[in-house]
Length: 203
Image (tube, rainbow, N blue to C red):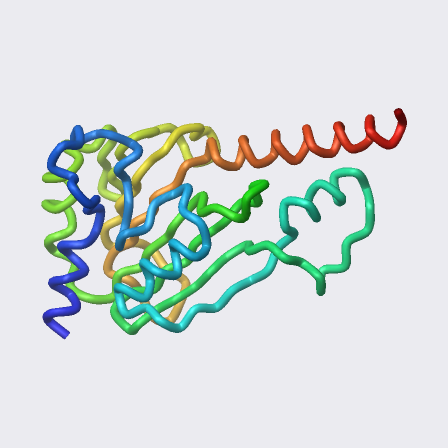
């Protein structure tokens, strides 16, 4: 168990060859080898490396299906070919990854990691890799876009020590990495494709 926890602490927010990165580089924000923009297969590979092998997938419309829905065409939920969320846990850690549809396949837009084991080293690890947070309160530390949640437009990393939880099993810490710009890109691409297809039908 100690080796798993130790490996977890070291792997949080580490990027291969990270020594050359600036401390506050938003593109470097990651947790357990996962970062926004990764494909489903890349996320699954990172989860397997962390011994998080029990993957639960919730389906969502693929890019093409999202385009059809934008054109008000019916798409049966049972045929969804995309991914909305992927969950995995191993007793010490629980991960939930949220995806958005892109033309080449779903990509991760937000990754939430709940830590159920010792987390005392996490603040020092985060500061060592990313410098002092842009915003720090008793409830959360923020790197990158430090606006309120719904106002964020850029990549961010959020660390919540001793978070409130309504579940029976309370995590000792939560780490969230996300990039809201990916949702905007996805929505714009779907809208453009839907408009193009309508013009093609009318021509």
